[in-house]
Amino acid sequence: MTTNAGIVIVGGGLAAARTAEQLRRAEFDGPITIVSDEEHLPYDRPPLSKDVLRGELDDVLLKPAEFYEEKNITLRLGSGATALDTEAQTITLADGDVLPYDELVIATGLVPKRIPSLPDLEGVRVLRTLDESLAMREHAGSVQRAVVIGAGFIGCEVAASLRKLGVAVTIVEPQPAPLASVLGRRIGDLVARLHRAEGVDVRVGVGVSGVSGSGHVEKVQLADGTELDADLVVIGIGSRPNTDWLAGSGVEVDNGVVCDVHGRTSAKNVWAIGDVASWQDASGHQVRVEHWSNVAEQARVIVPALLGGDPPDVVVVPYFWSDQYDVKIQCLGEPEADDVVHVVEDDGRKFLAYYERDGVVVGVVGGGMPGKVMKARSKIAAGAAIADLL
Image (cartoon, rainbow, N blue to C red; front, side, top):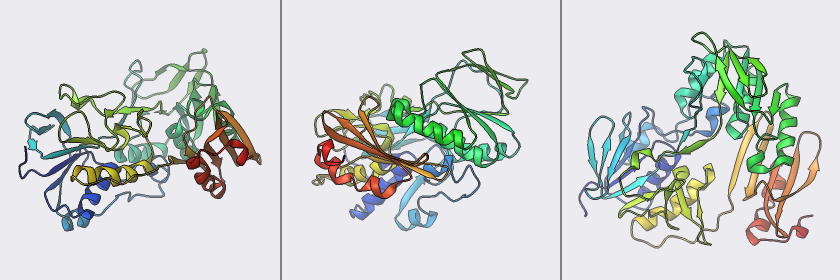
């Protein structure tokens, strides 16, 4: 079915903005509509746990309002999609409006996980949106003690930012080290060392059993019986794909929206991109990548495919980074927690490590060593033997 509805993109972040931008670059001149549940123009999320939270940055817009006006891109803000009808080719919005589409791009990203057993107290926060970051920043100005639950990338970044603001911070993580489930115990211990050197109390191997307070959080109870004072609690236990609104639509969902190698979903004229999308890789496996740099590569593929052209062959070496204090932790490739880790440089704060699997280098992780990390890109892309780097 083809109408004059054009292309509708659901989501208000980087994936939505990049898709719209690439469509206009590809000289698509039909209607483009971006639908978002937030009131803000599409904005960049990585600074939320860092520069924005610390009060060093306020403007995180990916493009100014003039860009959307000049490119004739319609913005439907403040009312997200709640349902999809793939037969009628329409989406229903939270305000009740129904929008038709010729092609639909799902770019709804992630929603933070919460701990359902915790009581609803003031001062218990998650971080995903700009409004949440600004509210946390304001709150941080009046607190003395914060507990960060979860030592993934967001948890570690929030802890570093709060510490820089002068807040006493405790990180609580059930795994044996920060980032252990992603980068393994050895690198996790180096990240823990970094935080402890900055005065953070890092508690690993223990979970949270509860929080308490009179209206506002005052205490955090740990599974080992310890009780921590807290004016602020930040839950950073990960996120899940924002796919609830697709229930009953017929779009296949399995740890994200299931797509082929070009971003096509199981439903006709429906595509997905970014953190919410599980794309098929060259080996036929479904992979969902939650990295900022991945979006640009996907947009270069999905737009030509959507417009009926030939997508380029893109060889992507995954890349992500995390700023913690003065150390930029960078990762190239696809390291896994159970890989063999070779720490080749460590000065007590900065470090460089190669990840080996079956004798091949599959990733490199560095803290404060950007040049040396990026030099390994070609070796990882080529599937070089680990001996070539050691």
